[in-house]
Length: 469
Image (cartoon, rainbow, N blue to C red; front, top):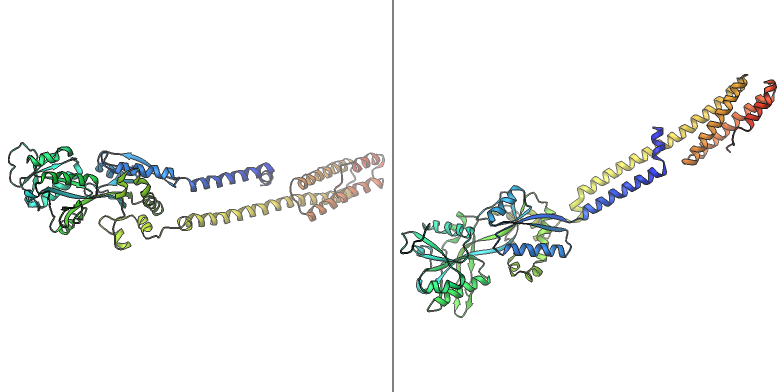
């Protein structure tokens, strides 16, 4: 223990401990301030969502936010949902009606889509049953959109034809025909298709162009839209869908297109986070997404479609069929955690450990101080014992040995006093003991108790090292 105490009190050891402490503090500060990197699975590759997420990632890096995104691209939303479910991603672009990961919670809606079925007014296609034996043009044939169309047709007892060989279709069947946007008007005019179907945001420029192509094929310039009756009942049966209303004049005011509100169903592309993502990080991701949205819109117009999911209460948000992440709710409700609230556990732990470590250092210091005092006290006791032994010893050789031991003890005490702080009372007692021991040996020589050897011995004791005062 004494050796350990001596080693611990060496100046270089003290500086080493301070350097280690400062290094640990710097590492802790770096850890607390470093950016959190989240992996986000993005799909579909040919959709608008990859551009939105890339613009978001670039904006985060440009503004030096505490969140960074690592993009993991996929061709299909099923793959991005699977990546979130498997833990390969922290965030993912998900379309719930196609694939909903069981650990996914909504942060934001990237794009709301409606299933729009439009045709020239003369076709008189205004209800789903009117689609029996009809051919529908589709511009971008995505599996996710086909799944929605197939589900809606099945609700009305219709099925998609597996193959379209031309000619009349069998009863209760509907055919999808892929048509380029530039050929849509001609295909409707030549009756190659009866209507066009698209799962798209009604306010998107592409939706506007599709309706204009249908208008160009209509002699009256009027467009008929399929209105979904009892859309609420369909959503109750298929809860991953949502009701969508297109107000009158969504696509133009002269003539009014549509002439009155059209009710349909749709789906949404959502930015979801794994349920285990901390509330504070989820809140930061959501906050930055909406704060940077206007700047992102300068890069891609699709950023304008980003919106908050609708909910009526906090409990309703977290218990909905498509639940919202509690961290996102914290942002929407302006209840984000402060720095102290986020790290209160660590703060209390550091305070607790700091107090304990401080007490331990104080105890070690006291113990080392006591060890130093005990070492000098032991030397003092030995000096007093030497004094007593010198008074009683008639042996000159023994007196020589005692004189040397006095010198050694005096040197040890001097080294302790120079290297470490020592109480003045303890040093004073040691100095008195040294003087007393030497004086005793001198007196033994002076009385001539040792005959002819006395002068030599007296010289040894008189010059036996410096005295401490």
